[in-house]
Image (cartoon, rainbow, N blue to C red; front, side):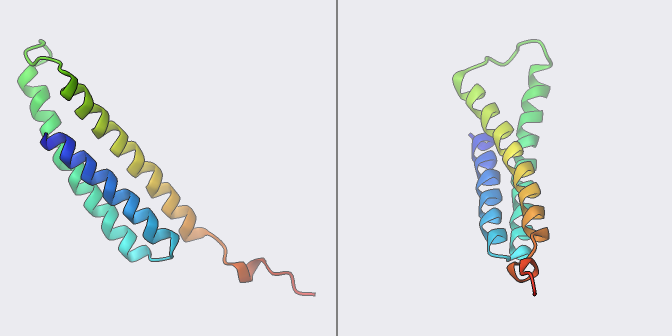
Length: 103
């Protein structure tokens, strides 16, 4: 369950960061991305522990909850990576005033 909780927290922080970036609050967005990374690292540590226990020999049963946990960690990582790119887009977005044509 710790894997699912940490991965979920990672994804939630990343989406919250995106909300702040949309409003131009990039410092807060960066703080939340860092929290997202910390939660992802916790999830990854649990995942690595499971891999070590299994030793590639099928020692751990592959249950629906394990598949669900793996899905959570992978989607949270992907979400954060995409959100980091979107935040960069927001940072570099030209302002409306720079798009005005002066005659």
